Each structure stands twice: as structure tokens, then as C-alpha cells.
Image 1 (cartoon, one colour):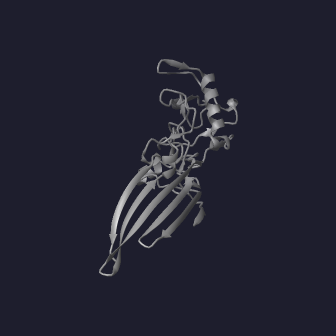
Image 2: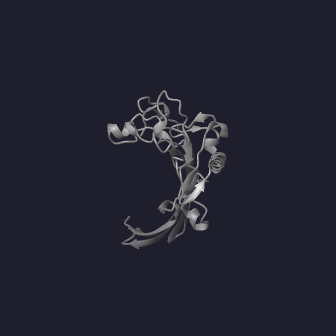
Image 3: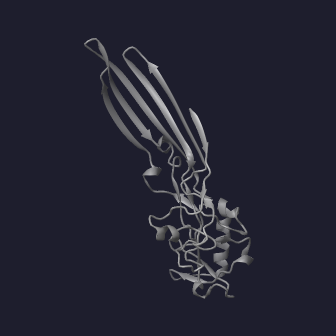
Length: 259
């Protein structure tokens, strides 16, 4: 069995909060929290593939079954926002970033991180190198990022099931003693680089150094700095999630079936 599903869903408010205030506060936007914009719903994965194959060999006193299950798809969506509310509308840090076409469209200023000076030029170079390696941001040059526009990488996972049935005859009736071994994320058992789950390192990659001077109707142009990631300049969008999802696991089962 093989199945492919393509899904698209958009909404005005993504339901990111459990109360009215938090839902309003956390809805990523370009023009302010009171101006909800139609964009991608976070709970919809656009493409997903599943597949299953099973083979069973019957003998007189026993039977063998091997089953393989596959699931492939993106783990979800996320938004690129500033680290502070640049619109200053009373909502949270939910304003979607503008992705500049080139260095002339953004002004960086020096900053000191862990006693090391990051010059404006170093930050500009690192920022545009980050855009170049990011598939989504590089496609949005000269535009604003979209709410939930960025996708997690595609993940491939295989699960393997081995089953052996022994037939036991009791009072003329065939009962079954069944042993099973399930290997979840089987690909990761074969190769540590397979079956990994990925997460984004940081979605608020820019911070506004003069945000208190940027006001509605004003003439002050915002100045930017790279938001430090572990006291370093962010270079990659994703890293392997060090969690249960990126490891293989096994479970053994035994069952007695009365027929």
C-alpha cells in the first residue's frame, strides 16, 4: 500500500493561544495584531507519503510475517519574526520580518557579544549567507516572510515488525503462541544519519537596536543586529533534534491466542 496526501489550509488567526489575549498576541503579522492576514495554518503539512508492505510465510507448525511501514513528510511549519514588536502595537514579538533583496535595504550596527565585537559588516555578511542557505528566505527576497511560510525538512521514517507464530493444538483446537519484535525508526538503527527529526535553531534572527526611536509617522530608520545564537552568529536554519524522535527503539511482545 502506498498513499500520498497533499493538503492546503489557510486562516486569519492561527489559534496559537488558549485565551483571547494570547491568541491575539501571538498571531504573526506584518501590519499589526489588529490586522489579521490570511496565511498558512500551522497544523497542516502540505505533503505526506505513507507506505506499507507485508509478507507472510505459512508452514505446518509455524508462520513468519515481516512488515515494513514508511512515513515521509515535513514535521511542520514556522514563522520568521523580529525579536521585538517593531510596530509597537502592544502585542508580542510577532511581526514578520522583511527579507531584504541586498545589503542596501538593511542597516546593521556594531554589537558586543560575550566580550567580542561583531562589526556591522560581519553581521551583514553572516545574515545574507544565512538567507542564501535557507530555502524559504532566499525565495522571499524583497518581500515579507509569511506566517507559517517556512517548512521543516522532509523526514523519512521506517518501522519494521517481525512476527513468528507457533501453532499449539489443545483438545483438537489450534491455538497460537505469537512472538513479535517491533523496531521503530528502523532506518536510524542502520545509519545514525537516517530517520532524524529536525528543528529550527532560531526564528527571530534579527533584533532592532533602536526600537524605542522607531515610531509611527517618524523618520527614524530601524537599525538591526543579529540575534546571537549560543553566543555565535547563526549559520544554519536547522539542527538535529536530540530527542526520542531521532533515535530507534525496540519492543518485544508475546501473546497467546485461543482459537
